[in-house]
Length: 216
Ligand code: ADP
Ligand code: MG
Image (cartoon, rainbow, N blue to C red):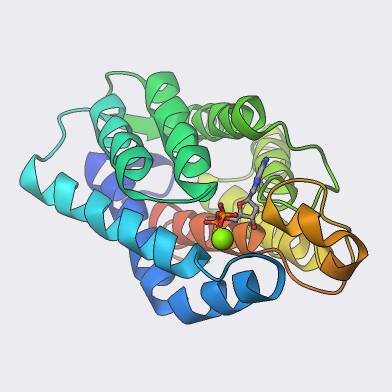
């Protein structure tokens, strides 16, 4: 693909690459959640994303709206924990914002991702610094918008977004958790990387790899 337009194959490829990365990092995500949660984030996300890919294979979607609706609905119905509804809402909002189209350009993708972030906020009420997936997703959406506003290609903007998500993930380590199970630990949540921020970094890395075109 050209790198500045993502067609349905590429958008589906993003979801599939995310599923592959979640499976590859399943043990790590679960280990992180065992430190400040209930040791199921890797299992939850792998179950949900495996089911999402199976659903896409069974009924290939005809539009971006249909694609992300399938992913979101599957996550809501198969993924346990906080992450099922949060990721489910993220993908559902991406889909409704993308609309009945066969491809997204850079601004279209950025708008859809921003809507996904807003869905997470509506659902979980996370704020910056609460030590959640928001702390990786918000900087990624900001970096994507900033890159595109500067005239960068979608690929360059997505690579910047991926770096921002990685930095946001790492920045959760010293944070005190204020949302979700980790918040029950209070001060003892400090010093541990948030599992949801870690899976979001995989989501954005997958976008950079699949939607970003070849690395210059
Ligand atoms: P659970 O905590 O129910 O076991 P998971 O382990 O699958 O669910 O997911 C935990 C992750 O969900 C956390 O690491 C955090 O990033 C995210 N999370 C939890 N609560 C919220 C919230 N209210 N808003 C945003 N993200 C949240
Ligand atoms: Mg958990």
